Length: 387
Image 1 (spheres, helix red, strand yellow):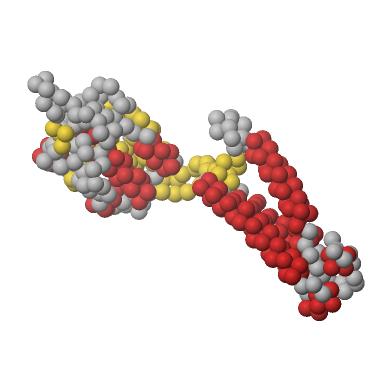
Image 2: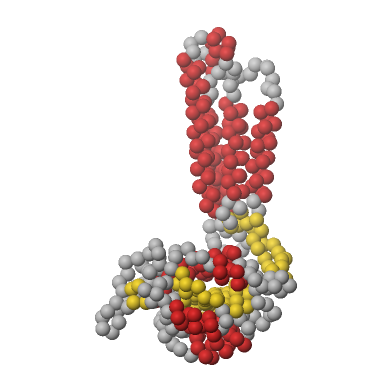
């Protein structure tokens, strides 16, 4: 083909080589950088980068799409040139092309996309001190994790414990409590998470709950109340205990438990999970788990004891609600938690992850600005060889 005609065609092998070479180099350097800062070593004690929204990593799939679009456009242009036989005709309505210029256009566009995705993933490096003020409400969840909480008498077929976890997360998200703690109970009661202002940590602990945490089975509500009374701090703050259970108490000893709660002036809110008609208690939370059997070989049936829950509420002047919905409406409980006096405030000083999304976002914006500047500068009319 005449050399002058080559000025109207893109060098596809050259463009492909530049793209592949650059991508290999870029992602190798990126991988080394992330490896040095512990992204692939979550247990590392050194300073490490983490991503707050890692799910946006799928947006990197836009990159091969961008490459494909560029390649297709260059291929179409070359096909057009091939179909036009006369060089004089080409000169009439087509301008010479420059492969390197197209590569730089690709370079800045892909950088804008790649660094924008990194910004969406919100890289966090280091921590910063945050000061704030909250209403001083301390809220502790006392959660029943006995085997009966695996019963699937909920609308939708979920276990009682799954619904309980959903209700707790909703209370954590929407309540004005400054600190939240978690206690679990079955035959005995055990602290699971001390009072903390880190609500993300609370939700993580809640999501991990299962009925295998305590081998001593039963439903010892009295132990849960007594242990909860010791779990609150000694600070002047409104104290709210959210008792979540199916209400089948098997241990007794409630008199001492009532006294412990009254002594600390703790507000008690009770959320009963399940139905009064009840359901078969499975051996585990697996969907097709076989049922527990009593001494006579019959399947164990668990029914919510609403009367007992109302009795506890009456003795402690609290509130009680029963739910068998997959998404329980906890607005009644939220009203009680959030009704604290505005003057009952505490100062908070805690550390949060330092979001560094500004760094990759700056590179993305800079790439767009450079591309705009380069594309805006008029090119010299001086004839040059194809590049």
